[in-house]
Length: 154
Image (cartoon, rainbow, N blue to C red; front, side):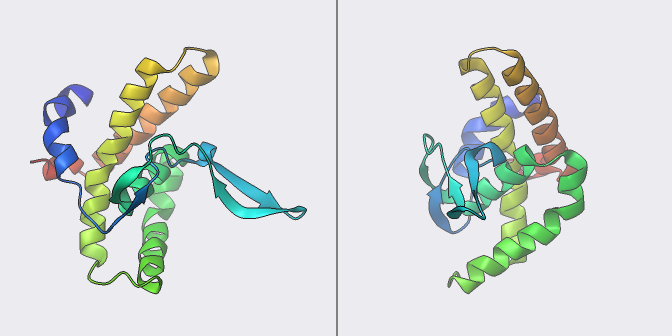
């Protein structure tokens, strides 16, 4: 998969579309902290080292691709994305419908593959990291294949 994607990385990075927002860049369950009955914010997002501007659907694709087991993502993905789109509408985002969001989501699945490859080369090796990157590679590659994302590449 990575050998097939590598020649398209530069063109892919220019083709991500959707309403622009602050983009976390590493938006996965490990970077979310949840409040408890004793207090705290309902959800706090940490590790903003890859902060940028881009379509929020990229963070959605990365979150679902990295954080959910493949079978769980497949079972709940559309429901979660429809809730995300409804939330955008409730916040005043107009002119961004299901078809646009779905295409952007499919296209953004490559972001997980890219981050997995790059991060696995720069993060120190230990057993936990090895297991995490193996899980991420399996999840993100399945994400790309499940959505025939190669068909969208320029």
